[in-house]
Image (cartoon, rainbow, N blue to C red; front, side, top):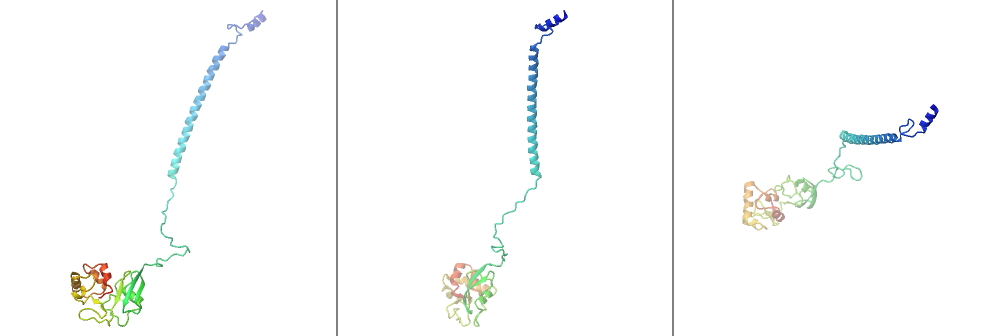
Length: 234
């Protein structure tokens, strides 16, 4: 009896039978675990995304502090000047090429002509470069200590250039210190008013020491002086 019931129970497939295996319960359980797996995967994805974002933020912040703490290289300005060593590597002397001036020395000197002098030279240096004054040079009216300028002419008068009482030498040169108003007006670009200002200047300051003293006279500029250099003496 027992064996027959057990076999019968095994063969009985009704839901109420003890040996019945309910597949519906298995489907419910599988669906539950499937949803759990999906939820776990979603949670893992969110966690990984948050972790990756945090890592990126840390890298950015770390890079900022690294750059802030790194020493900044000092940029030296470019030297636009010429290389003082030159092509041969020899240091160039600052006096190797000084400023030069050209001066025309005429009159009672050994070698009249154009001389080349260093900047800030004096009339005395110009006369020496022209061979020095001759024995008949009249230096009383020449300012030897005056600084020369480029392009000027220095006239050294001679004792043989006799000047008459009217202030004109035998060579036709007009003495600025002795000429009358009429004689001064014979000069180019010198009218009655300019001639009178020349006379007033020498009465107030004494004899002209050089032809360049004309620049101190009101109304006489460099252009007028250049036109008078070869026609007058101090």
